[in-house]
Image (cartoon, rainbow, N blue to C red; front, side, top):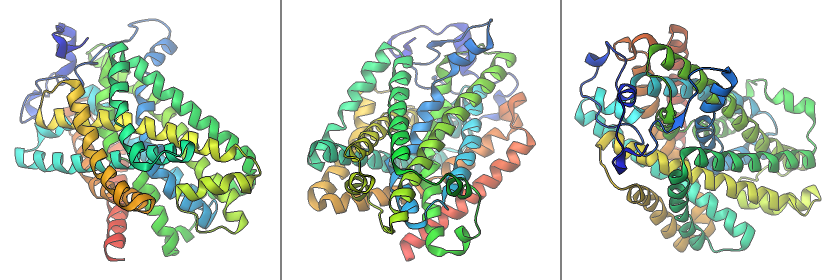
Length: 461
């Protein structure tokens, strides 16, 4: 039901936006609007029957979240890691993915238990100055994330069709209309579109892996952590880059909002069941993201590293070398098609995240088309300027800069998430179990430390 269009909230809808009974006093202010009101509780959930039918009703949000873990920002770090160090950094991809699974499960728990997305929860928990500072940091991160995705899409359009980068960047504004059209038909259509593109990406890389013929034993050995990752400075730098590019702050805001598109029963039993199914959905989806991220690195390792090409770090370089080195004329085309699908998917989810953050922190109520257009223009304008003035080299540097900015903002999303979900006064019976809290704080400490080192190396190295 579109509440912005004058839809009426039922008593059940109102209950779903409210915190768990008995936890109202844990918040500084009261949440006034549902998250993503145009799609809030629009996906039906069976109240009884086959558990698989219920699980299917919850399938979707996890795949929108998984998109952020395989966006164009990840491609550059995976390609660089594979070409320089072979399969060794597969262990870092695996570790990053396990961290992501835990953090996304907490984001889903927060949204379902409190009726707030992470932005709304931060606004209602922290004082106004702190909330505004968090909003500014988050907006900067979303612009940086959108930059990476806009640039990735533009590069793919250039590789496939010879389109100038500036034109390609401008064309990415079209996805604003695509989101509006799909959401108008129903949130399930948007989810189906994103999942379809994910299948295309996975299919393309399955073929690339078959063509590159990696040695299975070497691949499996790469998933075992090696001390060299820490002792080798160059390897550590790329490892930190992989972690920074993998765990995306905007995904935490996104997931805590889109789990509320499901019309689950707003009772303790209903919320607990919703948390369980949402966690299964995101965990399975992130395993797909693990496959795709690992596949990019495996293809780079099997194709470039084994042939002595240790310095392939640019997406364009990988594209031009794949076909001649693999002996298949379509290898480069598949690579670019997957990049285009990845960039398109990522721009859709980043635009949604921008809307969630703006509405949650500021409670600004703008027409849907205007919100999304503003979010997209904030990324397109600097991308167009850099592409026009500096060309390919400039966009490559801008891609790296966007990942550094994301790394800087990540603690400002992870720490509030862990803090809120471990607060019994706010979460009530859905507070995170102690083992999850301990793990989450360890993950937060690792992410903060490694991203701080990455930032230090970039600024002073």
